[in-house]
Length: 99
Image (cartoon, rainbow, N blue to C red; front, side, top):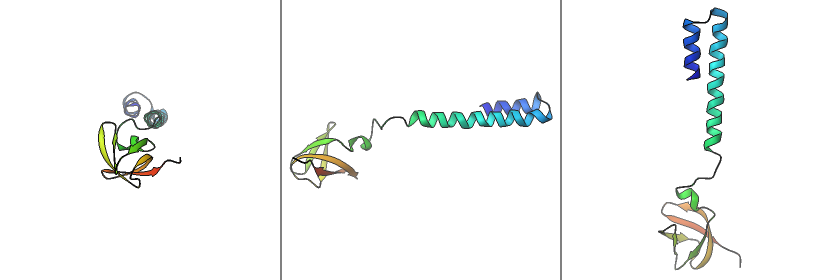
């Protein structure tokens, strides 16, 4: 939006040498705003989706577990406590927790 305002000012209000400065300032504001918004949206870990399962401790029984109310097949561990290291399609890849 700042770039569009800068272009409009350059075309209709500001004289020739300063019009370039106004357009450049509008572009700089747009780039800075985009960077700030990107940083704001990437400040936390994901709160939804399969990415949230990685790193969770689970209890595995016969190759299956319940995580967040859903039943998942587990690869890598048959029984006991484990930690999710990856998600492969509709299965969790887990490693056994050290005793």
